[in-house]
Length: 222
Image (cartoon, rainbow, N blue to C red; front, top):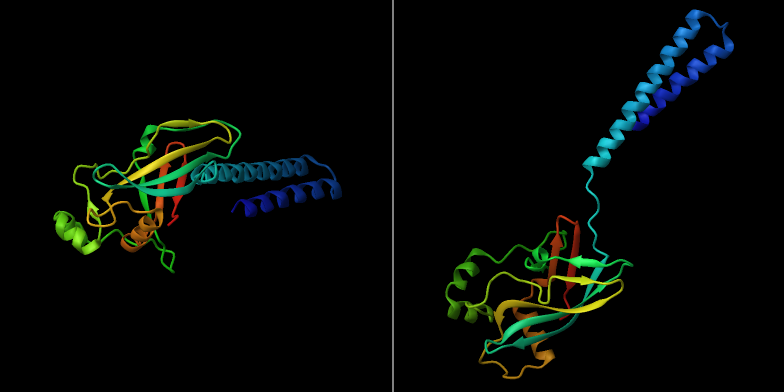
C-alpha cells in the first residue's frame, strides 16, 4: 500500500511541476500547483504513518544466537539415580549476557518434529494416568518417575551472567531415574542408549525469556 501511495504522490508532484513549466504562471495555476503539492504531502505522510504502524506491529526476531548450548554428557546422581544432562553455555557476543532466575526455572522439553513440520504432541492421556501408578508407568515406559522431585525442570547453577565469549557448565536434572534393577554403574554409552530407547520423542531442552526476547536451545546429544 505504501508503494502505491508514494507513486500517486510522485505523480501529483510531477504534474504540478510540468504545469508550472509549460503553462503561463497565473494565480489559478499557482493555486492548482499548491493543491497538488499539498495532496502529495498528505499521501507521503499517510504512507510514512503506515510504515510506522507496520514496524510497531511486527515483533522483533527472537534472539537465538547470543548464547548457545552444546551437549556434554548424561549422568545419574544421588541415591535415586536421577538422570542429569550436562551442557556448556557460551556467550557469543562482545557484551555481558545475564540469564535471570525466571527462565532458569522454566526449562522445557523439546520434541522431535514430524515431516510436516509439526511438533510431536505431549504424551497421551493414558501415559498421564499411568504416571499416577509409578510401578505401572515404569513397567510400560522403562522410566521411573521420581515422586520426591519437583516436576518442573530447571537449569542448575543459575541465575548467572556470562562475560563476553565466556563458557559455563550447567546441568538439567529431569524427574526420572535410571532403573534400580539396571546396571549399577552405567557407562555414558549405557545412559545414551537408555535415553534413546525410552525417551525417543525428546529432542533436547530449551529456555526462553519473553521480556528480553531470547531463547536458548539445548540440543540432543545422545
